[in-house]
Image 1: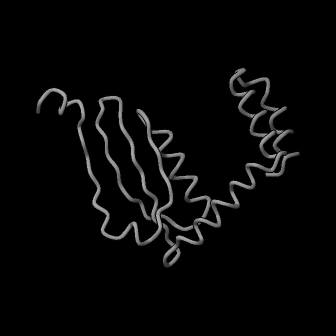
Image 2 (image 1 turned 60 degrees about the vertical axis):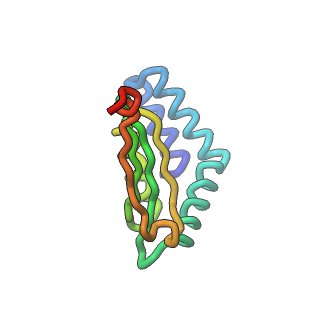
Length: 126
C-alpha cells in the first residue's frame, strides 16, 4: 500500500479509532515517509535470503509467560518477509510476557535442542 492510500484510509477510519490507534497510524505513516520502515524491510529481506536453505529459514524464538515458565524453539518458515511478519504477529498476539525472535544462520539451527524451564517451580523448590 503506498503512503497516499494509507493516509486516505487513515482519514476514512479516523472517526472509528481511539486516540491510541490514531497515534499509532500517524507514527506508521511517518515511518513510511521517512523510509526507515522500508529500509528495515529491505534489510530483513536480505537477511532472509542470506540465511535461507532450500527456500526455508530458521527463526529462533524465546519467551516467558506470566507464570515465569520460559521456553525457546526454532521454527522453519518460508524465506520471505510476509511469512516472517505473520510469525512475528502470531508471537506478539499470543505473548503473555517478554519474548524475542530472530533469524538464525543454518549452522546455528542444526542440532538445536529446545528447552522449557519453570522458574516459579524452581523458586518453590520443585
